[in-house]
Image (cartoon, rainbow, N blue to C red):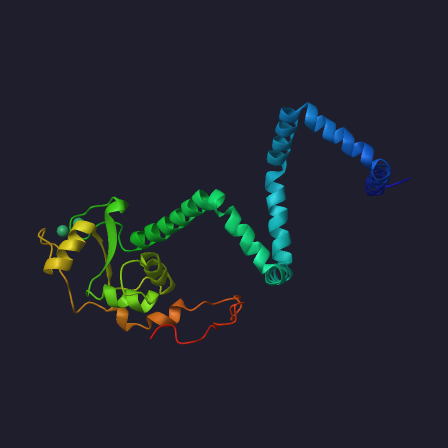
Length: 239
Ligand SMILES: [Zn+2]
Ligand SMILES: [Zn+2]
């Protein structure tokens, strides 16, 4: 008497043997079915996907967790071995992926910004404006430009996402407040807002005095050299 497991194993072995012996024929049957009923095949595949989605995702996650080091090492080795081809492919594919890439970069930047705004109160401390599109984070002591140079190494505009990430990495330090662009601008030009509720406060904590550079170096399992071989991690982040 066979156990259910043995029966199943026997059936699976038989199915495999049958498939091995009739492979060509079976593939032709499937190809014909796809040709004759493309919509039906698509619908079936779709249904199959959704029926097994949760378990497949869980399986894939588990597999990745169990083989993480192997997978990362293989990916790295593959990238190094095929770098030129991979980059060429990406360049060629870029026009098609551009919209998607830009959208996901944008939504990532937005998420980072929203998270930071939420941590500092989520509305303008001067006028109460709460629509995030109008909001910015302000260095209360007025050392924003200096701080941005430290974080990004850039002289002029940009780097606000790097700033939001920096705040998060540094556990949301004091010295920052939420202002709408109007109130922020007024304080930038005049030292205070005509609403009368906020002004530049030079004695507030200066973020540019903290060790800004140290927290922006890469950490974790990144390789510490660039495959180009001209840069190594650990050099002084910014002058
Ligand atoms: Zn305001
Ligand atoms: Zn104001």
